[in-house]
Length: 165
Image (cartoon, rainbow, N blue to C red):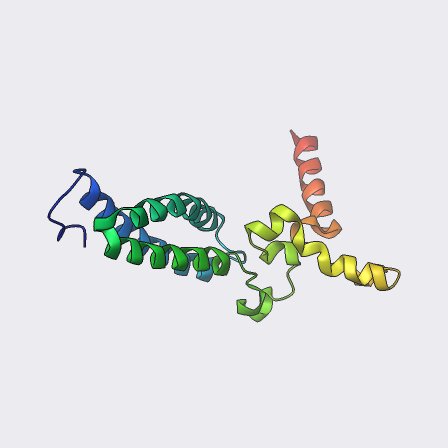
């Protein structure tokens, strides 16, 4: 699209478009790899999509105001819509995608960056606490590394190492 234009204002337009395409392909591969290897959505990819979407809003407006960039503005606006959609979808909870041995993770461990930043994962607990008095069974299961048995073993091994040193 950029290469077919007769008039170029900047020498970096074509390089920028090519680099944007490469980044889009690499972010798709990165997203797939992250979904296969992690319990929670990718922090880097979600933040990247969020910030670049904010900056692309301004670029989309600039392209739309230029009369010779009608086609580019249309394609860029649709690309921006897809990027915003991906920023929302990428940050979603992955609980239903996890293998059965990881399905009992606490909601904090599977929440995306937006839910963890705003503590949105606590809303279910607040709803339960509003309707009835909470008991220990109503609380979320602790992460394995925060349970007392694990911490007791860790402290005991550190204590034994310090005594023998």
